Length: 74
Image (cartoon, rainbow, N blue to C red; front, top):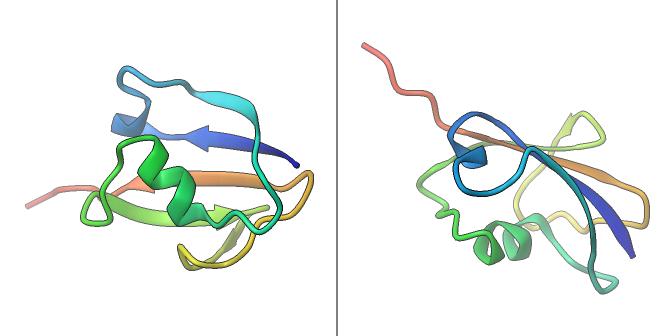
């Protein structure tokens, strides 16, 4: 199935901004996160089609997955 993956902020460093990728049915955001070398501790927000989801919500054909890192601050 084709999924559009969007990375934001520091997740783009040495990766990509937006990419359409092929994954098997039943793939979850956690799988993609691990494939990209992103740890759960770094992960801030995960969205599928603009809605907040968990790392274990299944993706479907044509979905857009957006991943944002935690934002540090004072």
